[in-house]
Image (cartoon, rainbow, N blue to C red; front, side, top):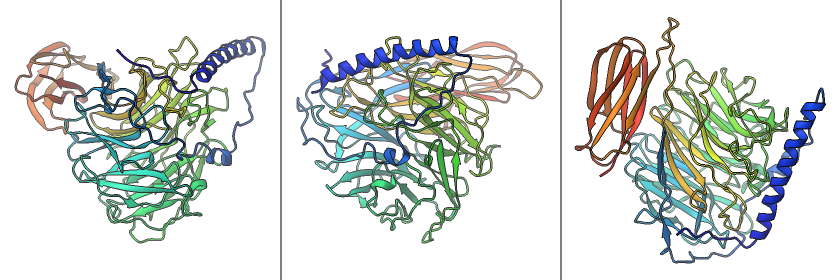
Length: 590
């Protein structure tokens, strides 16, 4: 039996949801009438909050005293694990038996994946031991088998209020956990380090800090390799006027604060292929702001911000929307193509924004720069629902080493009740953001308003790391009737690839059953005669077994596969057909 915990102000939440449902229905009628009877309508609107007001919003500080779990962690329900086409999802805040813990809450996750051994994954989040209190701590869980099973040891720094978890990783597999606290006067951050895949953490190092901080690491082979960078909202900085710091010694210490040109807020950072650093956030009025430093990578240098670019996005970051009442619609994302392909050095920005031109409450908007961040393209809407009333929110973006861009977000397009029922959606681009795949729905819809831990939000962000096989996503949903944190591995769908001669060299690949205990069958299709190679790999890409390696004519083929000698875990089947290459993920269970 699943127990649903009702918060103290449940009557108010229910009334708010009913009123929101009524208001949204009225909005549909209003917009329909305007479109039908008004030859021209401008959605020009007064911004609900100024930039300064937004920078002051939703600061994280203690409210309630700590309460232990109401059942001492003894009451459980089945964990929210499921498999679907292109996605494998596992709940990570689980007990030692892999069961969901009743009476707690978890949200605002961040993820680190060991690039040297992607079997090692760690996710951190805001842990609420009791939904009756908004006291939160630095929760975390780690996996040693590519996300199939998770160990939740508890919290870092037990008994200390901690929020805004941000995880990062270096090239050698060390994990870092940036965590915010508040002492009644100042916001301060500590960065904890793990050298064993997230199983244990050191005592942490003072990292200056402030509210809504973010952290990234330099994973290039250049001068700044291993550098750790962090910035936060300037209004809540412990070291005004600065709101940025750097570590050049693997997190052993952090430097005095400096300012960031353009004053971005509610955003994140990325390092380019030559060690250049980008900070992104909300713009001066609307849109987004990106600031660039070329010399931040040089240890001991006085950091210079070479320029800041205000980006037109036909929208603006916002907070206090009905769908996430005391949170934000989503933060600004920046990512850089570090591949050796044609997009190398491209800078991409993305955010869930309230629109200016059409009044939409939330769209996923994207723009790219091909000149190192000096200028950006006309903004492109990624969600393809074609509606002005649906809300897309908590959007996240990452770029794979091969240049593929992955984007995931929550979406209300399937909600017919107008109560903010949301589902996970995904899209990707293989051509530097010029075109995007058809949006894929990857979860059932859920009510984001249940399970609030005395704080009416599901957090302010999700987090994602991409590799060449797919996207590793850390996200929150309420499919279990409460707020829980989940890991999903998303495998990009099959796409047609042009062979340069005007032919559609389409390939497809599937596996049944999946998960598999003993025997499985792969099915694939090719449209032209070509050399075909099919191999089973581990999650790091190491080949384990070759299933097909020969020329084949156009057609549909099947291959029987015995998984009996494989240990339980995640594997990849890679199909190469001519110039096309696709993957599907294989789950082996016993």
